[in-house]
Length: 217
Image (tube, rainbow, N blue to C red; front, side, top):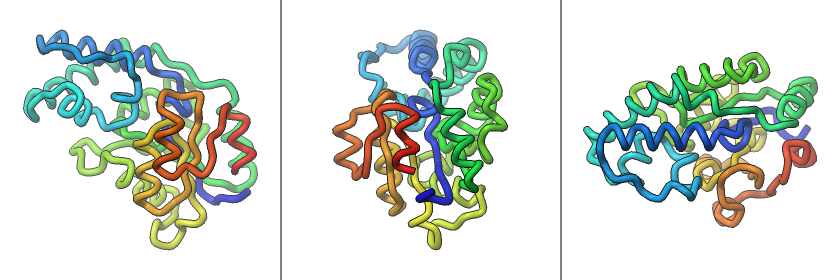
């Protein structure tokens, strides 16, 4: 295996989750009574931290954005997360990596308790060595901060192990985080992001299916 540590984005890489995310975002905005932006382009809100979506995409002030994020998370936990499934082939990929001594973690901008809940619902909580998400105080929420944090949870160190770690994801946010951390990034085309944007951010390869990921790992 080329890498010792493999970090998987969750939404659009491990799981198909767009429907639940969109319905939760729409519910939060309707509850707040604010206009909804065009949500047909999943790349605008699947990938970045949730609070950034409310401030940047929806144009809310910080206080209202925090309220929106709270409404979103409550609804997502009750309804949205059930509109979710694991992509075919992902369990086989992770099992193949781990059977060869590779340490694997989910590395998502979802808050840790939300990520844990989704993993449990999908039955993949024991598939990975670690489930890593944003901290509750939002001090660690961007991929450039989550990547070193996730690596440390696996026993690695970003200053020492850059050549041995790869980030897998479906968006420019994942790719940019990897680039800023100085590690390899492999994109997946079956998710929600733009292949061209991932290439512009330095993707070394694009996999069209989970099975194809193993060819690059």
